[in-house]
Every structure is written in structure tokens, then in C-alpha cells.
Image (cartoon, rainbow, N blue to C red; front, side, top):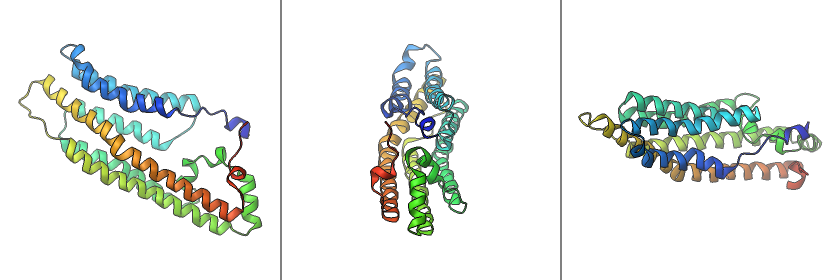
Length: 242
């Protein structure tokens, strides 16, 4: 079983960054001049298609359901839909805050179940020797403390989404402005594309990177807690792939 699980191809963070952030930003800000009269609209559709295709390809290739990625795809679809419908800036601002807030609520509510999201987020069955961990937890009579550790880290994970929602709202409020309806269609679309592009890269730098650090802190806290409760070292907890 472990051999099968290790065949899942790991995501290349550089490729993910290029396809989800860098290339869409360049398309939105640089390509529309080369696509004719409908250039801004075509650039918008192309920029949105890339991360959508990348996410769907990842799902189909690895046959894994990553709910955060699914929400990301839905978020991208909403962005495109709002842009095509030329909705006011308020819709974009609310959307940017709503998606991480909903995710935070889902993660928080999962603490009430026996399946906290944190267990699936870090793919415990793929990266940790669960048989050894469960055996040591039982041997040390620390099963209850382990469940408490999971709840603590799961709630911290939910907190990261609520922080993201607040930061997204503030950033979107600063980036998205209503566009003068008297402008020609092409200029309105160009202006909106620029706002979407700015939100794209600023959201990554200002929000995604710090929250990644927060996520690493959660993982560090979880691993340290496991080491304390089981008496195992890191190399004994993590599955060693050869």
C-alpha cells in the first residue's frame, strides 16, 4: 500500500508559481495589445484558463481530491464570471474575502467530527508511518492527547484561513475600484484586467507566502507534538522512501 501511495507525483512549486501567478499576470498586462480589438477579453480568458487547466490536470493525473484546490478553481471561475459580466468592484472584494472565510469555517467545523481536515491536508497516510505512530500512542496511553493535538493544529489551520480572509478583503478593497462606465469597452476591460493582475501577484506575495510560513509552523507544532507523545524521532515518524 505504501509503495502505491508514493507513486503520486509531487507538485513542482516553481511550475505551480509560473502557471498560477507569473504567466497569468504577464498575459493580463502584456498580451492584450497583440490580440486585436478583443484583446483584453481574450487575454482575460486565456489567463484564467491556465490555472484552471493546471488544477484539473493535477486532479485527473493523480486521482486525488484536494478540496482547497477545488475551491481555488471555483474562485478562478467566479473571477472570470464577474469580469465578463463587468460587475462592480464590491463583488470582487466580497468574493476575495468570502472564499477563504468559507474554507476556514469548513476546517473549523471539521474539528467537531472525527475527521479534522488537518489529517487530509498533510496526507498523513502518505508521509507518516501511521502503524508505528498508533502503536506508540497506544503503548504510552496518549491517544486522547493525540486527538487534542489534532484539534489544536486543525483550529490553527482554520485560523490561517480567517487571517487570509481579512487580508484578502483589505487588499481587494485597495486594488479593486469601480471603472468609469463611459469608457470604451476595450479600455474598461484593460483596466479590469490590470486590477485582477495586481490582485493576483499581490495576493501571492502579501498573503500566500506569509500564510505558507504559518502552515509550516502548524506542521512543526504537529510533528513536535507527535515526537513528544510517541517518543519517536522524526526519521521514525516520516515514511522513508527509497
